[in-house]
Image 1 (cartoon, rainbow, N blue to C red):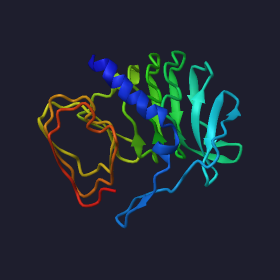
Image 2 (cartoon, rainbow, N blue to C red; image 1 turned 90 degrees about the vertical axis):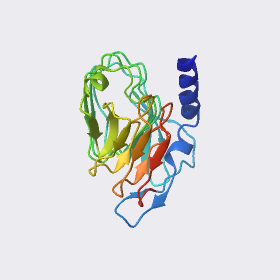
Image 3 (cartoon, rainbow, N blue to C red; image 1 turned 135 degrees about the vertical axis):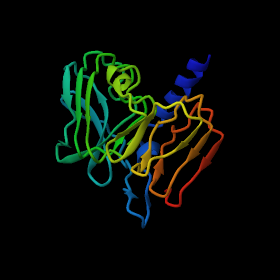
Image 4 (cartoon, rainbow, N blue to C red; image 1 turned 45 degrees about the horizontal axis):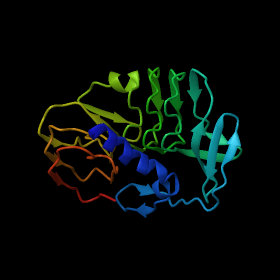
Length: 219
């Protein structure tokens, strides 16, 4: 029952694709800003094996990949539109994919983007990714191979917490909290310092966290 509820909840997020999840805007004077973007035309464009939407600033979000290549490099540009996001479920259950490279143009990796990619063992994530959704790489060998206590990716995103502590202090190097405590049933207390700017919507989903101390720079 828990797994059914879990997937229904995530699929509800995916059903909001991609406007609600990728068109937020907020600035801070402390070193980070979320770009203002919105999809004004819901036309789905095609480019090879990719489907994508265009934002009002002429950037693009990949909504689906239909190819079967073992190795994929996310294009930095599609027909003059810089690729800044990978939508929820875009590559989900692609069992052909073994190697993935996400370049520096990409900022957001959506929920379940690579969920069920059971052959995916190598992933390179660019330095500007600041948001990673829950189950983005669920059931992939690469996800399982990340065994550090604090797994930090991209633009200092805390992607995964593998420790057993009930009380956790977020490392000072972290700027963004991704799905680090998603489904964590051990943790109860999280201390977040002033270096953190964003907390993903799935950061504490289905966890036992009961207290979160926030820093001053959360957007």
